[in-house]
Length: 345
Ligand SMILES: Cc1cn([C@H]2C[C@H](O)[C@@H](COP(=O)(O)OP(=O)(O)O[C@H]3O[C@H](C)C(=O)[C@H](O)[C@H]3O)O2)c(=O)[nH]c1=O
Image: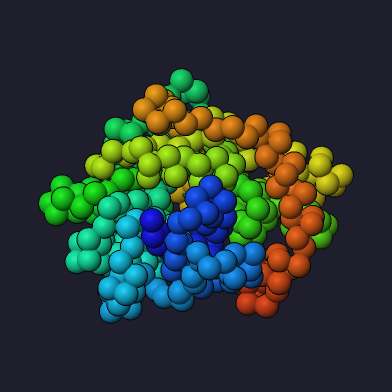
């Protein structure tokens, strides 16, 4: 089995490569990644010399490059993790989100059509469903919940999902889609809530919580997510969508306080700042379908996953210190500097 993993030098993609190489040591894995700011070759150093692994630096928008790769490699399966994924960046600069997330996905699927494929799997997000109100804890996203996006990021992912469905129906491409909730774990780029707060708390820097901090996210340990995708590749039905949630809803402010507690840092570091534009209030997935049909359930309790994650960032300071130096630091200071500190009451 030959699997192309796009975006494999990023957070979820790299964790998926590690998971697959352990679970299926006989599979050949090709990582296709353009190494944007969020992709890191150093993340993949433990697999670089494995004869079943190959890294190819390529942008999924590069049609000629993608076709050439497919012609040479004749992959059986493509799992598309490659995406611009950060909501705040999409609000500042939507264009690259549309190009990579929509056009890039269509280029990959055109290559699949041209060279043949057993499965094209699209890694998507629960953000395509929009948000749920805080005062209706009885409501959850289901696979047939209407798409109702808020940000340029989620709109680009929803557009890609629609295209994937269309390629399945019109061209008979064997496609599946998964929509996950918020992932956390090792190798996450420190612009996302959990690693950002860990890294800043360790440096005794202010912890910027958007708005009142009551927004809810459903946290999924990245390895559980990887297991679910592997199951979908093995047992999922072409044409189907599977939601993958952690069944673990938490308010942002509680996560930030928990990180302070683990790192023995004072809550006085926490600063409520201008809210994200269009900020989704609550995400919550009902994982019933993937549980009933494929037997998947999240295995990692949040209290264990967050401990493992914090410990990983403590043990791998070199990895993230390297990443946040230089350009990223300047970018972050600019973004963060634009946010006003809100009064406490
Ligand atoms: C960076 C940051 C975030 N936040 C808030 C904003 C959100 O309510 C929550 C999580 O934010 P983050 O940007 O880490 O993740 P989401 O916007 O929920 O989106 C993430 O999860 C979905 C499923 C994807 O599909 C996205 O690709 C992924 O980025 O913390 C703050 O309060 N302060 C901060 O400095």
